[in-house]
Length: 402
Ligand code: ASP
Ligand code: MG
Image (cartoon, rainbow, N blue to C red; front, side, top):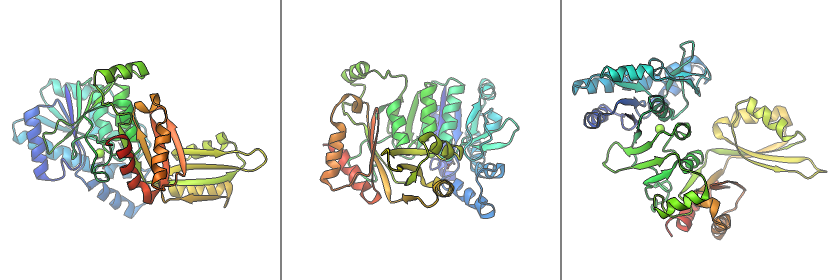
């Protein structure tokens, strides 16, 4: 069984929708999931916020998920025109039950029975991505970019053999091709590397979809709706032991580079607060306010007040500022002219000196490193936003295309 998902550009016009219907006629997927036409969700959000600037309401989710509803209807019509027995389905009709955290709901329960029934009757379900419903039948949205997550959840629920995400690029690249002309496509990618790339700013897939695919072992493919390029395959179920990774290298399943991808992200703000609160006290309050923290730096000198630095997404900027005012008064500063550049790859964990090479390279370009953070397969540096592009190009040259 195959689930195909088509993104906003792929269904961005009637002409494109007809083209997607042709792909379905030729490839015969068992389930189709759609996004809204590109730009439509932005337009709907703008309409909603013109009247009332709150995200956490049922009205907001009803409005912003309507773009997907329209496309499901249009595509189903285009399929019918080609003699395919199809039926549009909302997220709710498909059985996706979510929390009531409007604008960013998460899936709580999903059995896939409605979808399987439809398939069994020979009817191709064309399902709205991005949408679910609460137990009480209120329509919810899964967060921006969430239709990838819908597609992977559906694939997991019906135990599909394949989930293909059709988009407007050929696949996952070693870095953003718009920033670095040397960027090349990655044909096969370990899911843990993809997860790291998605969390560090690669925008090809919704982070939660990568997480779900890896949790439920959904074979995931990324392909271009507008070309025949074979695309990128995300490989699940790889062991995380060094021996096995080395083995796979010998079988050339993976490319040999230490670093698979370089990513950049410039939508974070760095806050620094002076406080006497303990770390648990401080961060408990932030998480109670549903503020997501990324990089944390904590400096303690026993006799002096402690300094805490952390980054948050710029969408949480105002809430974080308000919260810090109540907590530490004026004792905080922020920097919004920062970016995070990351090098990501399975080889990072079993090669020494990778961080030193990264710092050296940035240093040779006089790029100041404001903060550093590492995980097993990623090293990230916070640098000035104005240096992000040159840092990416230089690190790509250093690690990927010397
Ligand atoms: N249409 C939604 C958005 O633009 C969901 C998606 O396309 O994945 O965020
Ligand atoms: Mg998307």
